[in-house]
Length: 115
Length: 115
DNA sequence: CAATCGTACAACTGTGCGTTTGTGTTAGAG
DNA sequence: CTCTAACACAAACGCACAGTTGTACGATTG
Image (tube, rainbow over all chains, first blue to last red; front, side, top):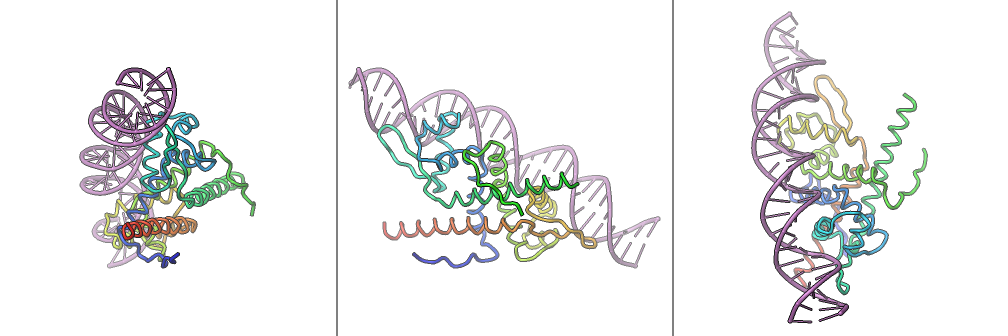
Protein backbone atom coordinates (compact mmCIF):
# COMPACT_ATOMS: atom_id res chain seq x y z
CA UNK A 1 0.00 0.00 0.00
CA UNK A 2 1.62 3.24 -1.11
CA UNK A 3 1.05 6.43 0.82
CA UNK A 4 -0.28 9.38 -1.12
CA UNK A 5 1.58 12.67 -0.78
CA UNK A 6 -0.35 15.59 0.73
CA UNK A 7 -2.71 17.49 -1.53
CA UNK A 8 -0.85 20.26 -3.40
CA UNK A 9 -1.96 23.91 -3.35
CA UNK A 10 -3.21 25.52 -5.38
CA UNK A 11 -5.10 22.53 -6.76
CA UNK A 12 -4.21 21.76 -10.39
CA UNK A 13 -6.99 22.39 -12.88
CA UNK A 14 -7.75 18.78 -13.87
CA UNK A 15 -7.98 17.70 -10.25
CA UNK A 16 -10.42 20.52 -9.53
CA UNK A 17 -12.52 19.32 -12.41
CA UNK A 18 -12.55 15.76 -11.08
CA UNK A 19 -13.40 16.87 -7.56
CA UNK A 20 -16.24 19.06 -8.76
CA UNK A 21 -17.55 16.24 -10.89
CA UNK A 22 -17.53 13.89 -7.93
CA UNK A 23 -19.44 16.38 -5.81
CA UNK A 24 -21.92 16.87 -8.61
CA UNK A 25 -22.60 13.14 -8.71
CA UNK A 26 -23.64 13.36 -5.06
CA UNK A 27 -25.64 16.54 -5.65
CA UNK A 28 -28.77 14.70 -6.65
CA UNK A 29 -31.37 13.57 -4.08
CA UNK A 30 -32.20 10.43 -6.03
CA UNK A 31 -28.60 9.26 -5.94
CA UNK A 32 -28.29 10.04 -2.23
CA UNK A 33 -31.37 7.93 -1.66
CA UNK A 34 -29.94 5.08 -3.69
CA UNK A 35 -26.69 5.12 -1.74
CA UNK A 36 -28.57 5.40 1.53
CA UNK A 37 -30.63 2.37 0.62
CA UNK A 38 -27.58 0.41 -0.56
CA UNK A 39 -25.93 1.20 2.73
CA UNK A 40 -28.43 -1.11 4.38
CA UNK A 41 -27.72 -3.98 2.00
CA UNK A 42 -27.07 -4.84 -1.63
CA UNK A 43 -30.11 -4.69 -3.88
CA UNK A 44 -31.30 -5.24 -7.41
CA UNK A 45 -32.67 -2.50 -9.66
CA UNK A 46 -36.17 -3.77 -9.06
CA UNK A 47 -35.81 -3.68 -5.30
CA UNK A 48 -34.39 -0.16 -5.41
CA UNK A 49 -37.19 0.86 -7.74
CA UNK A 50 -39.76 -0.38 -5.24
CA UNK A 51 -38.02 1.14 -2.25
CA UNK A 52 -37.76 4.59 -3.79
CA UNK A 53 -40.94 4.63 -5.80
CA UNK A 54 -39.17 5.69 -8.97
CA UNK A 55 -39.32 4.42 -12.53
CA UNK A 56 -37.01 1.64 -13.63
CA UNK A 57 -35.33 3.77 -16.28
CA UNK A 58 -34.64 6.54 -13.83
CA UNK A 59 -33.17 4.21 -11.22
CA UNK A 60 -31.08 2.46 -13.83
CA UNK A 61 -29.74 5.71 -15.19
CA UNK A 62 -28.70 7.07 -11.80
CA UNK A 63 -27.14 3.73 -10.91
CA UNK A 64 -25.22 3.96 -14.17
CA UNK A 65 -23.90 7.37 -13.17
CA UNK A 66 -22.90 6.10 -9.73
CA UNK A 67 -21.21 3.16 -11.42
CA UNK A 68 -19.28 5.39 -13.82
CA UNK A 69 -18.11 7.37 -10.81
CA UNK A 70 -16.86 4.16 -9.24
CA UNK A 71 -19.14 4.40 -6.23
CA UNK A 72 -21.19 1.24 -6.79
CA UNK A 73 -20.39 -2.24 -8.06
CA UNK A 74 -22.46 -4.28 -10.52
CA UNK A 75 -22.92 -8.04 -10.18
CA UNK A 76 -25.13 -10.26 -12.28
CA UNK A 77 -27.20 -12.77 -10.35
CA UNK A 78 -29.40 -14.86 -12.53
CA UNK A 79 -31.87 -12.60 -14.24
CA UNK A 80 -31.15 -9.58 -12.10
CA UNK A 81 -28.31 -7.17 -11.51
CA UNK A 82 -27.22 -6.61 -7.94
CA UNK A 83 -25.75 -3.26 -6.95
CA UNK A 84 -23.50 -2.67 -3.97
CA UNK A 85 -21.41 0.15 -2.57
CA UNK A 86 -17.86 -0.18 -3.84
CA UNK A 87 -16.30 2.86 -2.18
CA UNK A 88 -17.06 3.01 1.57
CA UNK A 89 -15.50 6.48 1.60
CA UNK A 90 -18.82 7.74 0.29
CA UNK A 91 -20.38 7.02 3.66
CA UNK A 92 -17.90 9.18 5.53
CA UNK A 93 -18.59 11.96 3.04
CA UNK A 94 -22.33 11.77 3.53
CA UNK A 95 -22.04 11.50 7.30
CA UNK A 96 -19.75 14.48 7.35
CA UNK A 97 -22.16 16.54 5.28
CA UNK A 98 -25.08 15.35 7.37
CA UNK A 99 -23.24 16.45 10.48
CA UNK A 100 -22.49 19.82 8.95
CA UNK A 101 -26.07 20.36 7.90
CA UNK A 102 -27.44 19.44 11.28
CA UNK A 103 -24.90 21.64 13.02
CA UNK A 104 -26.09 24.55 10.89
CA UNK A 105 -29.70 23.78 11.68
CA UNK A 106 -28.87 23.77 15.38
CA UNK A 107 -27.19 27.14 15.08
CA UNK A 108 -30.20 28.52 13.28
CA UNK A 109 -32.44 27.16 15.99
CA UNK A 110 -30.30 28.72 18.69
CA UNK A 111 -30.42 32.08 16.93
CA UNK A 112 -34.18 31.92 16.61
CA UNK A 113 -34.57 31.09 20.29
CA UNK A 114 -32.13 33.66 21.66
CA UNK A 115 -32.89 36.43 19.20
CA UNK B 1 -21.82 21.69 23.42
CA UNK B 2 -24.62 19.25 22.73
CA UNK B 3 -23.87 15.93 21.12
CA UNK B 4 -25.79 15.10 17.96
CA UNK B 5 -27.50 11.71 17.83
CA UNK B 6 -26.33 9.34 15.11
CA UNK B 7 -27.72 9.84 11.63
CA UNK B 8 -31.03 8.00 11.22
CA UNK B 9 -31.72 5.53 8.42
CA UNK B 10 -33.35 5.79 6.07
CA UNK B 11 -32.54 9.49 5.78
CA UNK B 12 -35.64 11.72 6.02
CA UNK B 13 -36.60 13.48 2.82
CA UNK B 14 -35.79 17.09 3.86
CA UNK B 15 -32.35 16.10 5.11
CA UNK B 16 -31.60 14.35 1.82
CA UNK B 17 -32.57 17.53 0.02
CA UNK B 18 -30.23 19.60 2.16
CA UNK B 19 -27.35 17.19 1.76
CA UNK B 20 -27.77 17.07 -2.00
CA UNK B 21 -27.95 20.84 -2.13
CA UNK B 22 -24.73 21.11 -0.17
CA UNK B 23 -22.96 18.71 -2.51
CA UNK B 24 -24.27 20.64 -5.48
CA UNK B 25 -22.77 23.85 -4.12
CA UNK B 26 -19.40 22.12 -4.21
CA UNK B 27 -20.04 20.65 -7.65
CA UNK B 28 -18.78 23.71 -9.49
CA UNK B 29 -15.08 24.14 -10.37
CA UNK B 30 -15.20 27.91 -9.86
CA UNK B 31 -16.41 27.51 -6.28
CA UNK B 32 -13.81 24.83 -5.55
CA UNK B 33 -11.16 27.26 -6.79
CA UNK B 34 -12.52 30.03 -4.60
CA UNK B 35 -12.47 27.82 -1.52
CA UNK B 36 -9.01 26.54 -2.40
CA UNK B 37 -7.75 30.09 -2.69
CA UNK B 38 -9.45 31.17 0.54
CA UNK B 39 -7.81 28.24 2.26
CA UNK B 40 -4.51 30.03 1.83
CA UNK B 41 -5.79 33.25 3.38
CA UNK B 42 -8.76 35.59 3.52
CA UNK B 43 -9.25 37.74 0.43
CA UNK B 44 -11.40 40.43 -1.13
CA UNK B 45 -13.47 39.95 -4.25
CA UNK B 46 -10.91 41.89 -6.25
CA UNK B 47 -8.07 39.68 -5.08
CA UNK B 48 -10.02 36.54 -5.84
CA UNK B 49 -10.95 37.95 -9.21
CA UNK B 50 -7.29 38.49 -10.04
CA UNK B 51 -6.17 35.13 -8.70
CA UNK B 52 -8.74 33.17 -10.69
CA UNK B 53 -8.94 35.29 -13.80
CA UNK B 54 -12.72 35.53 -13.68
CA UNK B 55 -15.09 38.46 -13.98
CA UNK B 56 -16.01 40.40 -10.84
CA UNK B 57 -19.70 39.67 -11.21
CA UNK B 58 -19.08 35.98 -11.60
CA UNK B 59 -16.81 35.82 -8.55
CA UNK B 60 -19.29 37.82 -6.53
CA UNK B 61 -22.13 35.58 -7.59
CA UNK B 62 -20.38 32.35 -6.59
CA UNK B 63 -19.26 33.91 -3.32
CA UNK B 64 -22.88 34.78 -2.69
CA UNK B 65 -23.84 31.14 -3.19
CA UNK B 66 -21.08 29.95 -0.89
CA UNK B 67 -22.22 32.53 1.66
CA UNK B 68 -25.84 31.39 1.47
CA UNK B 69 -24.62 27.85 2.09
CA UNK B 70 -22.80 29.09 5.20
CA UNK B 71 -19.38 28.11 3.93
CA UNK B 72 -17.79 31.57 3.82
CA UNK B 73 -17.98 34.61 6.06
CA UNK B 74 -18.26 38.23 4.93
CA UNK B 75 -16.43 41.08 6.68
CA UNK B 76 -16.26 44.69 5.62
CA UNK B 77 -12.82 46.28 5.70
CA UNK B 78 -12.69 49.85 4.51
CA UNK B 79 -13.84 49.97 0.94
CA UNK B 80 -13.68 46.24 0.36
CA UNK B 81 -15.38 43.10 1.55
CA UNK B 82 -13.16 40.35 2.88
CA UNK B 83 -14.24 36.74 2.48
CA UNK B 84 -13.07 33.90 4.68
CA UNK B 85 -13.87 30.24 5.22
CA UNK B 86 -16.46 29.95 7.98
CA UNK B 87 -16.86 26.18 8.06
CA UNK B 88 -13.51 24.35 8.27
CA UNK B 89 -15.40 21.12 7.71
CA UNK B 90 -15.35 21.99 4.02
CA UNK B 91 -11.62 21.33 3.96
CA UNK B 92 -12.00 17.82 5.29
CA UNK B 93 -14.65 17.21 2.66
CA UNK B 94 -12.43 18.40 -0.17
CA UNK B 95 -9.41 16.54 1.13
CA UNK B 96 -11.46 13.39 1.43
CA UNK B 97 -12.74 13.71 -2.11
CA UNK B 98 -9.26 14.54 -3.35
CA UNK B 99 -7.99 11.40 -1.66
CA UNK B 100 -10.76 9.35 -3.21
CA UNK B 101 -10.12 10.71 -6.67
CA UNK B 102 -6.41 10.10 -6.47
CA UNK B 103 -6.96 6.60 -5.12
CA UNK B 104 -9.15 5.89 -8.13
CA UNK B 105 -6.52 7.29 -10.46
CA UNK B 106 -3.94 5.04 -8.90
CA UNK B 107 -6.14 2.01 -9.35
CA UNK B 108 -6.67 2.93 -12.97
CA UNK B 109 -2.94 3.29 -13.43
CA UNK B 110 -2.34 -0.10 -11.83
CA UNK B 111 -4.89 -1.72 -14.12
CA UNK B 112 -3.33 -0.15 -17.17
CA UNK B 113 0.12 -1.37 -16.18
CA UNK B 114 -0.85 -4.91 -15.21
CA UNK B 115 -3.46 -5.46 -17.88
C1' DC C 1 -20.11 67.88 -2.69
C1' DA C 2 -18.40 65.51 -6.81
C1' DA C 3 -15.70 61.75 -8.62
C1' DT C 4 -14.07 57.19 -8.42
C1' DC C 5 -13.50 52.57 -6.87
C1' DG C 6 -15.39 48.26 -5.25
C1' DT C 7 -19.32 45.51 -4.82
C1' DA C 8 -24.12 43.71 -5.23
C1' DC C 9 -28.25 43.08 -7.91
C1' DA C 10 -31.38 42.31 -12.16
C1' DA C 11 -32.38 40.76 -16.84
C1' DC C 12 -30.89 37.82 -20.56
C1' DT C 13 -28.87 33.94 -23.12
C1' DG C 14 -27.02 29.46 -23.67
C1' DT C 15 -26.21 25.04 -22.09
C1' DG C 16 -25.94 21.09 -19.30
C1' DC C 17 -28.69 17.75 -16.70
C1' DG C 18 -32.70 15.28 -14.97
C1' DT C 19 -36.82 13.20 -16.45
C1' DT C 20 -39.66 10.86 -19.57
C1' DT C 21 -40.57 7.84 -23.48
C1' DG C 22 -39.29 4.26 -26.48
C1' DT C 23 -36.36 0.46 -27.99
C1' DG C 24 -32.74 -3.21 -27.74
C1' DT C 25 -30.59 -7.15 -25.21
C1' DT C 26 -30.21 -11.02 -22.15
C1' DA C 27 -31.89 -14.69 -19.03
C1' DG C 28 -35.30 -17.85 -17.62
C1' DA C 29 -40.08 -20.29 -18.27
C1' DG C 30 -43.34 -22.87 -20.91
C1' DC D 1 -38.48 -21.64 -30.24
C1' DT D 2 -41.54 -18.20 -28.29
C1' DC D 3 -42.86 -15.37 -24.58
C1' DT D 4 -42.04 -12.65 -20.64
C1' DA D 5 -39.41 -10.16 -17.21
C1' DA D 6 -35.36 -7.37 -15.92
C1' DC D 7 -32.20 -4.20 -17.20
C1' DA D 8 -29.43 -0.94 -20.22
C1' DC D 9 -29.10 2.35 -23.85
C1' DA D 10 -30.69 6.40 -26.86
C1' DA D 11 -33.36 10.43 -28.18
C1' DA D 12 -36.50 14.38 -26.94
C1' DC D 13 -38.43 17.57 -23.77
C1' DG D 14 -38.13 20.94 -20.02
C1' DC D 15 -36.02 23.16 -16.32
C1' DA D 16 -32.51 25.08 -13.58
C1' DC D 17 -28.29 27.18 -13.35
C1' DA D 18 -23.71 29.28 -15.01
C1' DG D 19 -21.95 33.17 -17.36
C1' DT D 20 -22.44 37.98 -19.49
C1' DT D 21 -23.97 42.74 -19.62
C1' DG D 22 -25.78 46.71 -17.60
C1' DT D 23 -26.97 49.26 -13.55
C1' DA D 24 -27.49 50.84 -8.80
C1' DC D 25 -25.65 51.40 -4.13
C1' DG D 26 -22.13 52.50 -0.55
C1' DA D 27 -17.63 54.01 0.84
C1' DT D 28 -13.41 56.48 0.19
C1' DT D 29 -10.82 60.38 -1.66
C1' DG D 30 -9.88 65.07 -3.05
